[in-house]
Image (cartoon, rainbow, N blue to C red; front, side, top):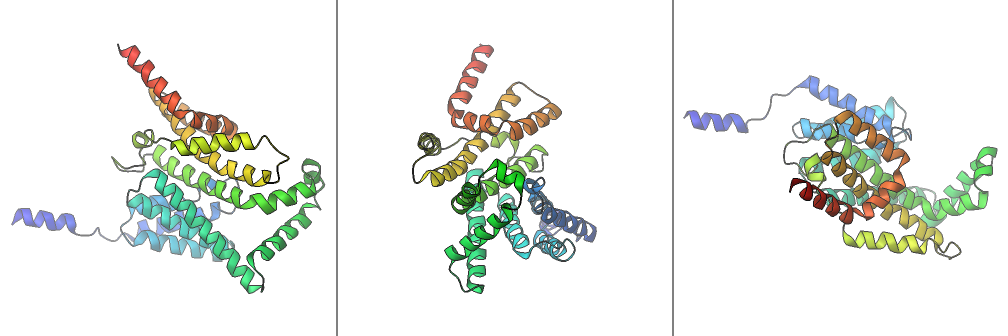
Length: 308
């Protein structure tokens, strides 16, 4: 009987903690607020990640929903922004809870974000009686009109170039930013050791992540094509290079983590190294990611020779 009682106790749900729920509602609201500024944008998913790791279902969804309401009513954030953050945060948090593997979760999260943005464009275009392309061109025209009023911006980049890049590259930049947000949030959670043992996003597991060969090949191909700037499709190629390069950048941070781990660097110096390299050394990490197979195999051989 005692064994049966112990089993029942293990299966029984945790006692409801209103204080914990309230705290996570506030965390979630801060996540939505973080989405409103460029500096804090990469951290917007952290609150919903920890909610899915710490709270019993369906409380993480309740906390996210109440946090979204605070974002709309108190912080006066645009409904479209709050909706995208809410859906993406729930998707990623649920993926973390279900222990999905890194690459599939990143790609699927990107797909969800693209569908949400496409749905928003379709809804707005329909409300204006326009198709998506015409509505997008009207948005670009409005942004260019505001751009022309700022003398400093006009000196840095020409109006025509700004219009072309916005028209053809904005979707790629959006995809790039989504991948950056996903990886930064998931990576910080790993560095803070939020994940349970043997979770796919623990530091030890992430250091085993390897960039698929097809991505490295695509990166090198696009890099060569970018040299032909006069090509009609240059803006498309350049935009696609940015997205593929983001996958290489992710692998570059994995390589950096492996190097720091092998040298037994402490947590504070490691955090500083990550911060500096991820902001000032973006392209260096991108190149490191493309060469990850060679760098990591060379490091393994060196480590083996030292042991011998």
